[in-house]
Length: 182
Image (cartoon, rainbow, N blue to C red; front, side, top):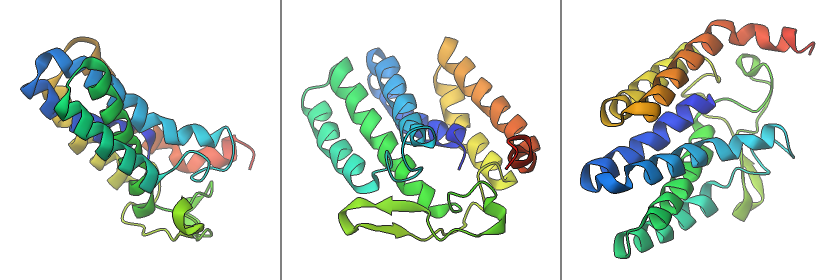
């Protein structure tokens, strides 16, 4: 899935915080955005969907940090909880997409995301056929609507900008490997 989809999903987790504790809305959103992005940094460092994708560990850390944030809510505890929850959701949801190859619509890879505790790769599920597929864009839009309705100012701008970026990427996705010369 596109990073914009992961960010929108993370912001979906942050939206209820904005309603319950408006003073913690920005830390929750910032934590969610960063957590939604972080796993895909391994596109540039290490092995994609292995080096920084930790579906089990991020989720466990998110549950612990979430319990701490509920017991002692502060900007820091909420941001950390949303960071780990969004990173865990990102890492896990990549299992429901395609493999990690550059042309995922060809379905040449059996590696969706690495499951570190089992020391093995999970096979792609293809619920979302590939990053930038039309259904990925639709998912981005659907997940972004609550965040766009909840947040204002620069956060709403980030959400709208993310949707526009996702639309542009979807439009040109299948040309990306050619542009990269691969």
